[in-house]
Length: 81
Length: 138
Image 1 (cartoon, rainbow over the protein chains, first blue to last red):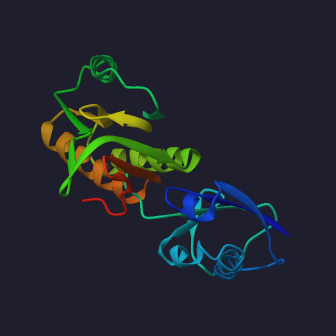
Image 2 (cartoon, chains in turn green, purple):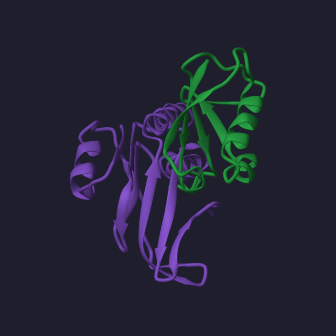
């Protein structure tokens, strides 16, 4: 299945893009999808341990199960306000 | 009312707008976060803010709803700018109105703390030595 991955702030530099479509197995957890992402973009890997992830605009944990066409945002620590 | 926008806001317009909501308002508090010219030991030339807009708007709406539930306020306005912000310009504006001042003060402080904690917005400081993404907020 395919998921849409969004990158923000400094992650865009290491990913060399703002978003991508990632092919992952069905019923995969967020944690395992992050591992696949780190393998496909090695420069990004070290920075993924310090991100929260939102799936379809809601923060979820690593054991959340992803669905086809989910929007998964990689969110570094916030610095707004 | 919550807004995320690129362009500067007009403080007078926003104050008049929120004061018009009710004649029971006895207190209005204004918090404005402003772009300053230093950070740690560096001079800052300008700030750039990036945002996951759809999620940020959702989170601001949650903050607005929770603030109205937690504090005895009449109305609340939160405006956060994104994009490039020059030194001295406003970044975030929180207006809280209540019948009495304590609730307005408490709601305003709670809101800015919650914005920093839960809204997906990121600040980049543009310095003469290069740009730095801020990863922790005081």
